[in-house]
Image (cartoon, rainbow, N blue to C red):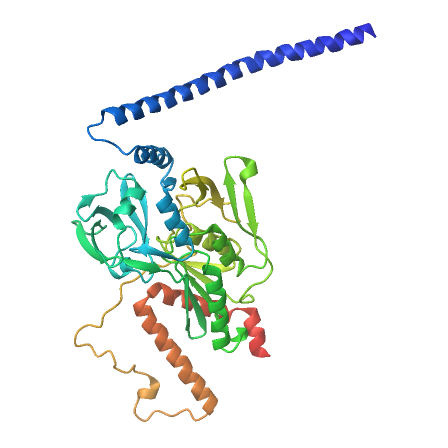
Length: 449
């Protein structure tokens, strides 16, 4: 018995010794690291005091500290930043769908302000601002060296006032100026219309109104075509959609999925990971879907496109998306401000991260410039067909209903041809949808019944 006790005590002693031998250096390293951090904080305090005491002009201490905080955050990535109280209030208003400004979504790349996209129906869009443009000056003041928030502040101003921005655009040799009148931006999150029996859903942003707008617009169009059985399908147009709320993107994707994962987010720690799944119910009961994207489709837009693509619920058409695969959390801080901090990356249902890669379309379709009729060309010249030949035999076997159906089909074909000239990508998407619909077993069975 004594031997057993001694052995146990020996094991305990050895365990204590081993723990001490391992933990000792770790504690020393942690103490050293903490000491280094405290030294750096002392350095910050020293620099702050010297600026406050010795700078050539009196400084605003609050602004100085805010600039230091913002510098710390913006050094992490282009999407992390400090939001002073005024900017925090503006952001909260924007997520509700109304705010003041130019209607332009921007980011910062190596100190330069880059346009992600102009928003639909805004002064920026009307002025011809394009995705990928770089804004170098605002009213003659250079933006290089400013934070993104400072640059945005320069672009803000009273509704009705003019602003001149200087742009650098790929393909243009020299920078050029564009004058824009500021306005209050009231975003319509989703616009809808019918092209024949195809529902077009133009989603311009993801905010609190996006899903209700989409749901109500679909219901209205389904009623207009005489019921879900007459709907050919849906084109979800996400081109130049800069994103918005993660929750809104999840609801939009869920509207067309019956089951399965929509998106997952993975943070620094495993316990920070989250997975969002769809719920039963498809608003269009399995009708085909085509999603349109381009280089201005970012963030929440890519979540929707990636989810529907991975589940084979939609064909994605257009060009490669922007590639913003990170999630920012808004964290209120002291003084009524907030910090926007990148806390996770999101992954599509198949487990792919699109950060800096984007969503690749299933069918690559570049946009074409509208084709103008050459001067002197007779655009109304009738096509040469059998029916146009003198003395051709008329087809007397068609009933009135068949003749009417033929005329309606011809009118739809002509409308698609016109649309192809105005918006080639959208026309291409509709053509794909018509093809998918023709192969849809649900519609085939309904037609036979």
